[in-house]
Image (cartoon, rainbow, N blue to C red; front, side, top):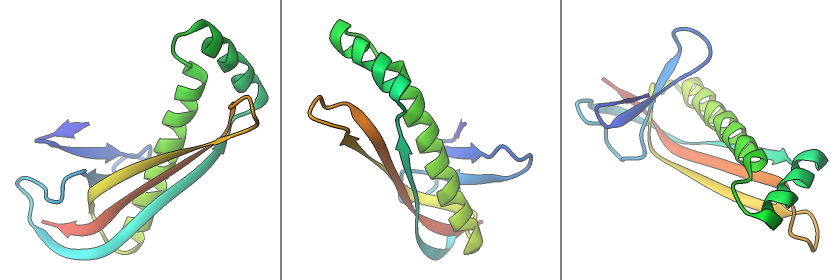
Length: 127
């Protein structure tokens, strides 16, 4: 959810939230303390059936929804991991958040076998 130019990522548990922004500051908020850089990493394997059906999309054209779904889920898991690490060091917001996606090919056909997602940000305390 986007509010005033920055994002509030709402976790599945009721009442838990963390302000997350790709910018180095938060409009209308004051950063009181920098707690450090935190990361979230996920390496997600693509199972045979998703890879098999995505090959048809590759040949016929169109969007590879099988891979998109896996990417969305892996990114959400990495963000959740980063949030948990930020909370452990007493932060209530993350700024300068970046996402990196790497793809490992399974073989010479260039099929995807693993998605590697890394998210990083600076854990801060805001008021």
